[in-house]
Length: 251
Image (tube, rainbow, N blue to C red; front, side, top):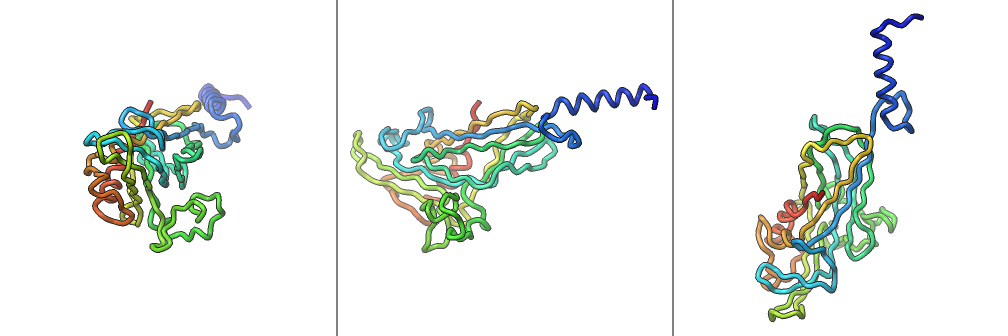
């Protein structure tokens, strides 16, 4: 059958489109895919967070150290230029005391993306889960030590450490803050500035600033005034609100 000029041009364009996409995908899909990865680091202002040993000044210059940093991030999605949200991951339990750091690997359509979305903590449906229903390696299992049995809810964000009360270099007062409960779940949206993903994909590097968490847009945490909070109060609400603006994307 003889091809017309128009049909020949169309065939050529189709061949180019297919060959430019992932060759491992069935040609019938004709959809180009882009790999994307997301990792996370924690800092205190401009310094990399180191647990147990390194001292950092608080907003009054008192030295403190972080001994535990553990929290849930969930409901990951990336927003396309048309407003469509593409889910890229579910629940992650990040524990800076272990080697288990955030490492999301996903595949999305090529194109332009506007925002990265995720939740700090667990949404109300997930927060109602029974940890006994999960294997020990699962982020929601009882083995993770993130469940309040007295409240039948999960701890969303945990930070513990010690502060020096004598303006010295020997932290002597323990502090411990655990957030949780449905109304302290927070959602974060970080601009991607029209990120274009081609078939080579890209890597996103998230950074959590503990300095912004403790002294941020929603208030300041004073270790000595209120060194302990494991409930819903002004301290945990301030931490939850500060967390929203404590995450940034780094090149």
